[in-house]
Length: 191
Image (cartoon, rainbow, N blue to C red; front, side):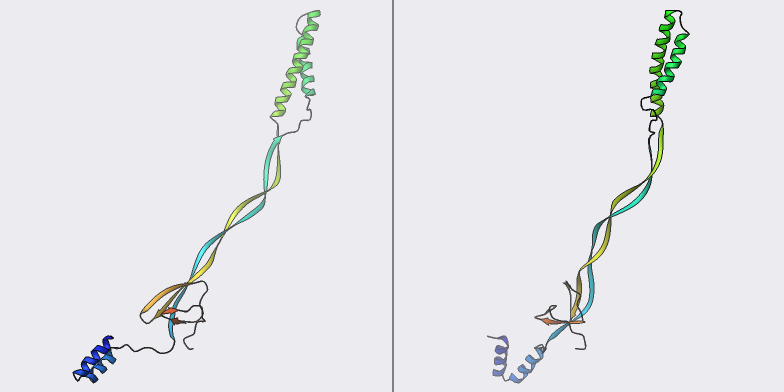
């Protein structure tokens, strides 16, 4: 049995029925009639950082060194000069047929030495030139993306926060069984 009925029946029997009914009505919270609304107190965007790669290219002036091209790739000048110097030196040694043999040996040895000397000189000769090169690298662009909205709402003494995908419009929301109906259009305080 309902507690109110038991108390009311007992008090009626005792002759206090009118007093009990009045007391019971005072204890009952008045039921609100009509639709209930909660006030939207604050709307805070919820964001996240999104990084997107992007390639950046630029033309850069670069100085480079390269071995100078040989004007005498077969080293004929070095060989010839070495042979002449070697032949002259060989001609200074000995006498008779030994002189001829010394001249030939000096020319051959001088030619070989002259060829090697020319090769070493050319290997150390470099040429500097300037070119423009296209250089590319990747940079990250960062931007903030809104992923939702934290909506603070209040009804009486109750204050709560709901996360929504879209920003709510208006400053109050219809309550259904104590929970906001965000799927319905919000109402302004005037309406």
